[in-house]
Image (tube, rainbow, N blue to C red; front, top):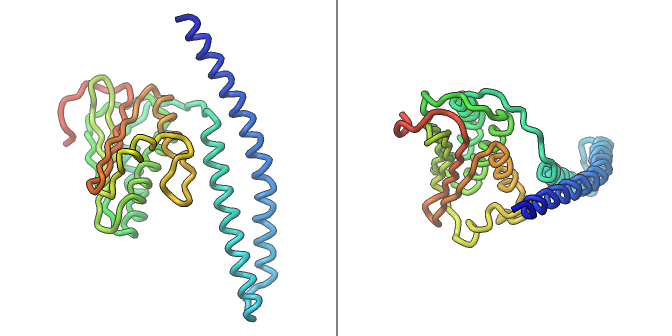
Length: 243
């Protein structure tokens, strides 16, 4: 048992060192990328309102390069978010209020895509000690993933209720669902079915949940949709379904 703990500590220390190395490498890349992006904007300003076919063609190409620079910057940001292990800023938090504010924030975005977002929040759930910014980021990621897997007319649901010894949050969609092969790899770093995906979103989500002492489970079926279930410690014993 002692040797296992010692191996875990060594592995954790090695991963932390590797993370620090990669973070420094990512920073070295991000700085010149920012310079490239800034200079692209300046060059586009020099062209002003392009009138000749040649100038219009150049501006289109500059737009393409600028989009790729932004995409690379987004990949680096996600990568840094993955290799860093943020220190949690825990505080007593009303998950009902946090989710209600999230729903209000993202509903217009989903409405533009023709999707409905519904919430079923048990009002008697006690405040729990979490980092509200991190938990909000987790739920925002899951809702946006649900939207990307859905189409116009589909529905996304967030439920909150007391669980045995803690709190249970579910994000459910009626979208395309996942095959068993995709479902089994969903939390693997760098695995993604999206052309522009980094494959780091769900691994980061799981790490944040586990940092809080919780767990996350995934259930999905092709043609029926996907459900993520988060369990967090704290709160009161379960008394029933959400009102």
